[in-house]
Image 1 (tube, one colour):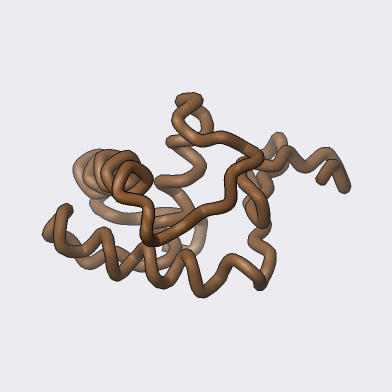
Image 2 (image 1 turned 45 degrees about the horizontal axis):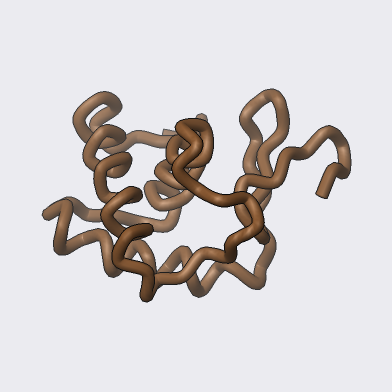
Length: 100
């Protein structure tokens, strides 16, 4: 997926060089399910934007395989993303994106 200089992070999620993420509608339910899964281990009010930001951070750290689809049933993925969600709240007060 290299439309307009997009780099695929995982199937269905790409990011441009400027940091603009695009999400295919096919992964929307998985992101929502991951947000619900992440609330308990993080004890934080996780939403889809937090999950997306955590995915971007995990991908930049080489913790995700760009060819492996996301799954809310993957405990290792939930653990990986939980650490990044905690960082997002600790460093940015949970604010993600330019609209916050």
